[in-house]
Amino acid sequence: MQTQISVSVPEAVRLTGWSRSAIYEALKRQELAARKAGRRTLILYSDLQAFIASLPNYQGEA
Image (cartoon, rainbow, N blue to C red; front, side, top):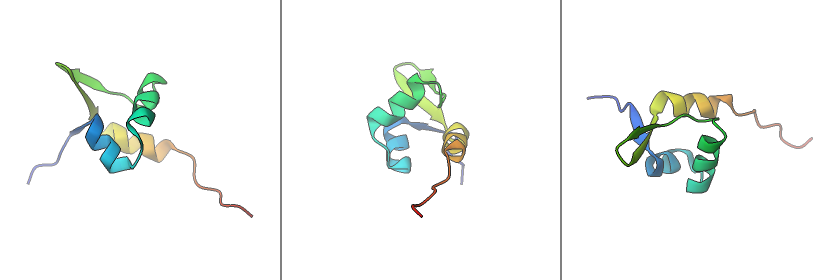
């Protein structure tokens, strides 16, 4: 079984639960990197994981 190395924006939306707009905003702010393959925008799976890992921890209400 091969490991997936990149995801499309719709796949990133499905994996993260974020909106399409939120993914594109992260790309625009260069918080998340992407590659272009023709017209397709691809996000390396490792970049998506690193981006999620870089988000602040939840600090629930006290």
